[in-house]
Length: 325
Image (cartoon, rainbow, N blue to C red):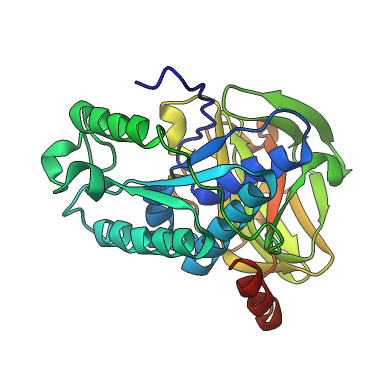
């Protein structure tokens, strides 16, 4: 529909806008050509993760502002494509999708980005336009593609506020320390490429961080299982084994951390030697997790990096508001 453009699909399923920000943070550190514009489509997933209690509205809003800031610094146009859950779904997801539209619209207006909403494309949004609770059917998808192709015939605006401060940082595996049975490797897949630390039972990774740990980039395979996160006296257990592997045997996941873990100097992510001790720990919410399929001695944990969030002070927010004008 738009043969005059070249498209690079950097999609990764079952993640929210924070993963899109990780992509942009990586791009900003690398040499090479930049895209003219980015179509940023995470509204639906953001509403699901937020409804599930994994991520706050504040984190989502600040994520979108950081996305706009990075695009402003690189001179890249930014278009938010805002899809939503099928109407009349339970548990408040449908209402949450509409609320998320308002959040995206607010950030776009504040930063001079652009938005394209599903309601603007389809008019009335109806259940019959969907193939399931989350995904549009072929006809509706075709209409979205047509609308995108038409929108791309005019320039996509570059956001304002290149000097605005960033709230998030991505610390990759090359910057972490290792202890015990651990090794640094590199994983290359169609959806994500980068350094990873692979841990066996008794292995640990140590991360220098100042701020709140909000997510971890991990890989889920048949060898994945539970792992531990520690910072000072705070310790929790999460599960890297995902039910989404039923469709993708090896799965890249951005694991949100629902509980507030603030690392003043060091965060330890490890696979303890004792399964019994690990299973005694309080668990952190992980969507779509399932029981490990391998004995504990055979399990491995693969981590590519962590995302740290440092909220802006009141003074910084005031300064950034002036810069973004």
